[in-house]
Amino acid sequence: MSIIKSTNIRQLVFCAICLALAVVTSYIKIASLPYGGSITLFSMLFVTLPGYFYGPKAGITAGIACGILNFILNPYVYAPIQVLLDYPLAFGALGLSGFFSQKKWGLIVGYITGVIGRYIFHVISGYVFFASYAPAGTNSLVYTLTYNLTYILPELVITVVLLCIPAVKNSIQQLRHQAIT
Image (cartoon, rainbow, N blue to C red):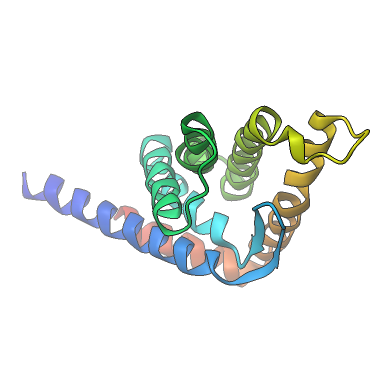
């Protein structure tokens, strides 16, 4: 019984640390877009780590919690469904990384999958709720696909490059070992 509680507490603490790092790094912006979205200092990576450490259930749960934290700290409300799409669902999708936690290259593939999931939710929200921001004569779907890609893709590329650095990869592997043992 105490082993189960100890494991749950360890998981809770590691997830909380990852979320705290995600929130802090979300304020370190390399670039910000005028209608929301920014390139941050690896904030999405920290949201994907609980999934990579503990699997999809923990990852999605941590992502949803991060989305709720982001909403509390910096809310943008247009409609209730938009809030759901842009916060808990989009950030929860980052937890999809957990489906690849046991695979070779699982961290990178999981990270990319989670970011694509987040991108899809933001595109749906943008298309449904923010199509009016598209410049005249521009297809609203093309506009929202492009707009969201301008901040999601650079952070994805920068983070994947970071994850390919052997010292970073080894450090995350050591953290994972500490998180699960």
